[in-house]
Image (tube, rainbow, N blue to C red; front, top):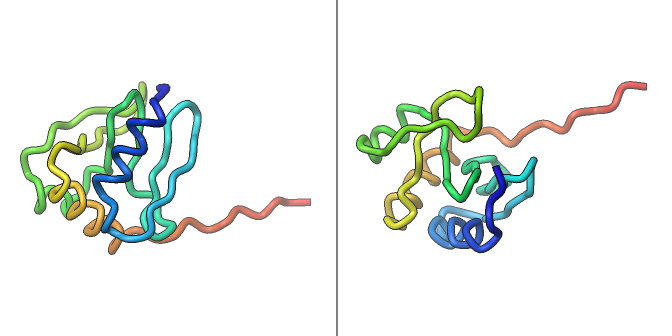
Length: 106
């Protein structure tokens, strides 16, 4: 599941105008956030987004794959097409909520 930081930076550049971009290392992969919303999962130097109708409307021919064993199928972003990747990120940002912080129980 390890990913190179240079690949993650490239993925961030490809969706740069979708909003405020940030990233966080998670279990050998990375999560890329747009406006604090988790949008792109990067595993094994591959960028995945949830398999949702909003993505299919923008890019109906994207490949499908699982980011790790046991995961649901996701769409694989074609990062060579920055316009399409940015449009997908914008569409997903509109329908994704900011994750709620988990509170510790005493």
